[in-house]
Image (tube, rainbow, N blue to C red):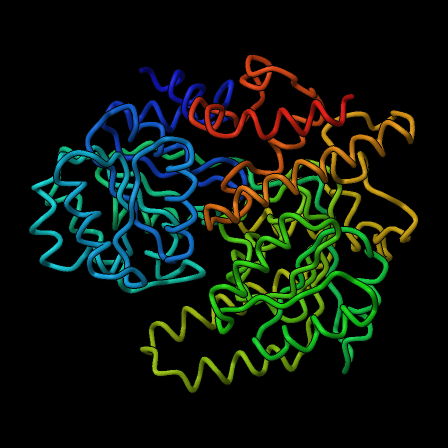
Length: 498
């Protein structure tokens, strides 16, 4: 099958998004690629489609076990043979995954950088019919990247040891210096470099000095009551405390951090993607890989790690294109604590200089006069006019009154001007589809969005398909998902239509 046929029949999409087709074509042609695309722009498909089309085994480098597991679950649900080799699995499961790759039964095999750069693994890789290497979160290779991981440096061995295998490096956040370093370390000469625009015009930005307590943050969250959002906190203890305070104010808030049991984290994810108005109070890892387009706000309860980290985190809001807000509340005590942490760390002097430079760049952005968007996009090398929607442009708080609702109520893909009964009926159907999705996901022990992302359920609400042929035309419904889920979701739609 061609790449376009795979996109349609396997992944259920009618066509490539801007930039995707160019990246896929380069990988198919055996060319190295650096793709910098915003959160939600479809980076994963850029290597998944070529891996299916080329045959053989595509090796994907991912920094987090949870990301690997979610990607593998999504691929399997779409009918693509995928597996991972990681430290959270029993030895037998890793051995089975490797044997399947050797037999040629897998299209994609996920590994951590530590696992892939182990000398024994590098020596064993020639046993596989390799189709490509995909390095996700590729900014981790850069000393200037916002999440430098020393083990990523070892991936430089791939280009010399496997000269005939294309390498794709993908990230959502990389300024010019980071892009240059990614290309220098990972890629061969003359790679395709695709940099999508960084602007997210539907996200309004505000930055304020934090007072001695969280009263302002709690007030902001109350004004956004009933909308789904994320509150980022710098520590696990603070996520627990703030989640409890928000829940006490009547918000559907809950904590999420790495110290929670796996079952509790999974339940929190299910709640976030299923429950209307859910608010996750979380540490920075939350949101990676989660397909939830209708997040209406992101609040930072402290200083983010860097400009790049900040951009990535606020980018989890408003992925449906509807208006969203991002507010950062910071204090000078955050800055002093960060400086002290850097000074007392065991990092090399060079690394400490990098971290201090990143902190300085973040503060330059925070304290820059004029439009927030101009300052943010300028960091990534983009010129922009004043956005007219940030707190600096407006000269005041931009947050809406609690009575004001985003266009389309922040939930449905069409019918902004429809009558209230129609909106209510659409909301009821969407809730019923989400409930059915959650039942199916729990039966398979996977996150709800593995079955279908919210965007696909919203498209079902907009089109109300009542036959398999009609359901096949909905974006996100590939052949494997059609065979597995058609009856369950069509039954819900028919019941509500009747």
